Length: 219
Image (cartoon, rainbow, N blue to C red; front, side):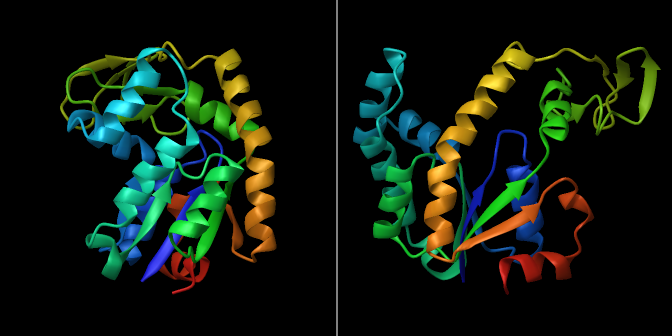
């Protein structure tokens, strides 16, 4: 059983890498804080309602509420045998210290990617309006090109064109990366001190073999 934390900047490929890990450990649970939030909000749990109060005011949900949500999810029976990949938590040093109180993590995997690659990954994202399949103009376009910035969806055959998401701009990306770096430094230092930090070159994680993945996660 492995308890892993995936850590890295926006666009570092945490979702892609967790899918690679699941090929090696099919029963391990991928826990994203976004999913935990949505679940609590949808089910109107006491924690979900508390988080909603802050979100409705446009405020950040405080650490203690986020920590309680994660602690609740990590207490569930499905994780006791199969372990987990935690994605999106911790985001602050206080959350990292709280996580150590909740459970003993085996490794924090720090996904390292250059800003240039991250920029292409995020600013090139677009999707099919018909089936929701996600593509990237620079790194993963559909196979059939129809014209400039126009393709045929590989999955459903619909015509699609490149339309950048409204929040995917160079300015917002720079702000997000700057904020990540500021918050990341104390968290990285914390796990390094605990000898639980492992750096992963995440430029092309899809090229990693099952053997490579096993070596990284130490199974």
